[in-house]
Amino acid sequence: MENQSSVVKERIEKAEKLREAGKILYPAGYKTDITISEAIKHYGNLDSEILEKEKKIHSVAGRIISWRDFGKASFINIKDRTGSIQVYIRKNMVKDEEFATFKLMDIGDFIGITGSLFRTKTNELSILAQSLSLLGKALRPLPEKWHGLTDVETRYRQRYIDLIANDSVKDVFVLRSRIIQAIRQFFIEHDFLEVETPMMHPIPGGATARPFKTYHNALGMELYLRVAPELYLKRLVVGGMERVFEINRNFRNEGISIKHNPEFTMIEFYMAYATYEDLMVLTEELFEKILHEICGTTVIQYQENTIDFTPPWTRIALLDSLKEIGNVDDQVLKSRESAMDFAEKLQINLSRDESHAEILVKLFDHLIEPNLINPTFVTGYPTDVSPLSRRNDNNPEITDRFELFIGGREIANGFTELNDPLDQRQRFERQVALREKGDEEAQYMDEDFLTALEYGMPPTAGEGIGIDRVVMFLTDSPSIRDVILFPHMRSR
Image (tube, rainbow, N blue to C red):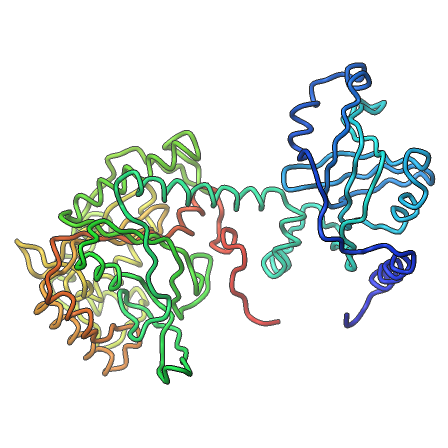
């Protein structure tokens, strides 16, 4: 250990004394017969007389989180995955060698305790130790004032300390697990099959995003971490797997913010013979189920806003939202030059190569998105910005696509899939042209995917939902880093 503090050196010296006494500092395991929460549940309502009469012996294990030393007796609190409890250790109640071991232990060490439940003079449920074992020596002390650790830098870089210090943080990740389980169960109940598709792609496709690049030595080829599983999941639909979903990571080489992390979790699902309108209804049902299961209500408080998830949700076309919510002039909607001038007045960063549709979407992002607090489906996305979406039958300038916004943030993207291989080729060709002009987020030509489409894909609708952002709402977390166990950060 570099730059050892005096406290660390003292702990190492204690560890050496224990080794010299023949103690194993890191034993292989320890048999418990009850968790701390189970002990509290079973014995928490019993009074002193009943506990004294029963004298049930149990074995528990956990980390020492506090210590009051009175020489020949000590009160410690230990914590396992379920809770914490006080333990009373008295010299004449345990073996001499065990007490000697205990006196060389510290806060942060793991300990095994066998003993009976009793109540102290202050009526606190406690364990009277009859034997104890060192289960793991901590060579570093917990940070000063570690109870309620608030330093954001430390919390994110050393999540393990954050989890020790803040029970509320652990609660968020327990809830995250439950949310993902509820999502998974919903799709299984709707006859979807869970699948896994590649993480490394020869061609990065399925989303407009800048990929991470790697190299496979044995194959002698460049590969990309996937930006989305879309094109592989649609290959499965071509193959007859008519309802599929995948919950997994995507990787996008983009900025880091309270809304973005370079790797993030999504569920993406595809449903043959469905349209984007069917998916909007399905999405409402999904959120209603999750909210009832996790929150017990469809109305939640997120930061400063009350969000009502009660279906049906608002549906509005993108151009209509610009007019009705953003008060954008008709000329801006009709003319690229007017849209460019208007965007520049708003100090929106544009390139001279951007199409009218791309400018309108940026205006939407700037003017409308932050105001969509209650769940809102925005439809009618221009074909220019929807390279994988089916054209609308009545207006080929737009696609059968929606994006879902909640709390002023994009949560989902869904559409009726483009299954015409000739149209898809033309869309890819436009994306290739954009790449050649310097757009690093434009998509590539994917001949293998086009070949799959040429074998025929049934009418299909698909959607991706950002799970991290859903967890943010349901745990009232202000930053995506609060719901990702190990968020990416710049090196020290």
